[in-house]
Image 1 (cartoon, rainbow, N blue to C red):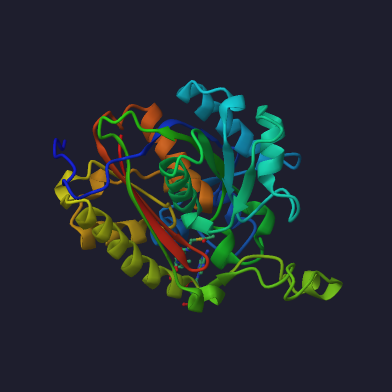
Image 2 (spheres, rainbow, N blue to C red):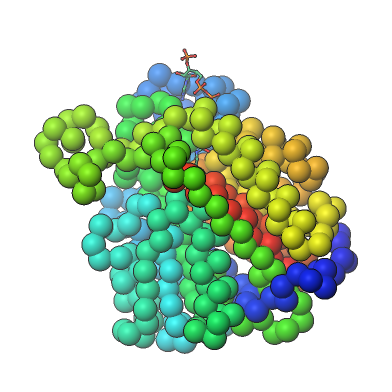
Length: 339
Ligand code: ACO
């Protein structure tokens, strides 16, 4: 594993991840279950996506419940009391409700100060990276000391379980990180790079339920409140853009692909991960992959994978971690962290 130090001209980390947590609902939806619901097969799903099962939230669970479970674990690992938090950022495209922000419910559930600010951030599968970037900037600017960044999704609530092209891909879950000041030893968030291309907005979207097309009986009948996706377009965009984001992150920090100990990618499709690994010259063994068990959980995907890798001892102090994700927007980004 790498002993390389960050280039002199690269930013010294101002903030660091002090603790992580994740929560997956207990109900498992397997490919065999989906075979009974839509015209699909275990073979097709495994071969085309790498997914074998995903988790589905219980009827009485909402985003803030799952988010709070993950957050409490992250706070415990960080040894930070919820009352010390200066900001709560919840990255999600499946909030408890459109109004108010899910962050408000999380504030109450975890016992944060009643005046601790919070907001939701809708950047889909890049949401956690966007949140991390905001947290890093605010800590760098001395605007906050401890920030909770959560990625949470109940995608099962916004999927059409008659559309085999989307319903087999996604699952529910949440992950969280407590971000705080770096101790000045070179460990922490080295860089974040955020990107978006709004010209691709309709390649992955929910057509109705917003101000453009408010909910009506007709929109419900037409299943316009569910995720619609042009899968192949997103696939091609993902391979190209994620590879480029990874290469930029590595180059801008004066590192080489050899210096990356773990890539923690958004878990959308194993074939996207394979193609990105090839293009970036990083062996696939250095990608942390849980897509087989978890599926695509959008904003929650990276923090769930990160917490699993931390808790099972794969991630060790001093290692270089690279997060990358791409989703609806199309938004994408990367974050380089020295653990
Ligand atoms: N079971 C069986 N057959 C299926 C299924 C299924 N579940 N889904 C689609 N098919 C069929 C199609 O109908 C098509 O049949 P046809 O050739 O008779 O028309 C055939 O399989 C091939 O379909 P493609 O769409 O070309 O399949 P592809 O290999 O592209 O895989 C997939 C589809 C898995 C969706 C892939 O395109 C993908 O992963 N795209 C990227 C998804 C992504 O990254 N999303 C962004 C993040 S998500 C977020 O932001 C919320």
